Image 1 (cartoon, rainbow, N blue to C red):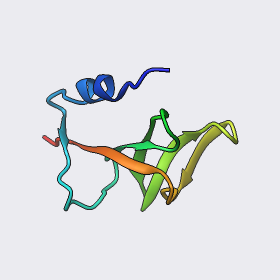
Image 2: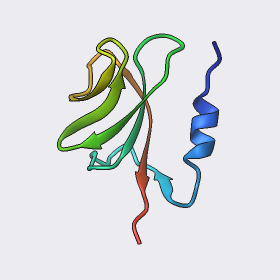
Image 3: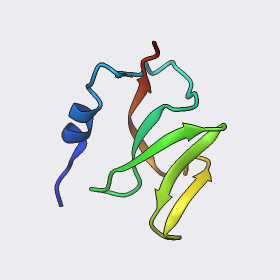
Image 4: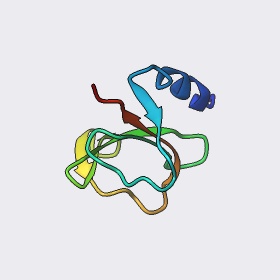
Length: 81
């Protein structure tokens, strides 16, 4: 399995997104890259004070808080008009 972190960052380097500063709090629509386990990457979207993401264990999209043991890697915010 490869580490696709650079590929993900390249995709989100589009003018429509910008990297978030460490001091910024999440707002709806922010994209969060986490590592739930070694060599695993997972994208979340901030929504309604929690996150929307595809949950492999339950085989559906869920709305839940950030799992404490997931390592936060990168964050991006959509740039508005």
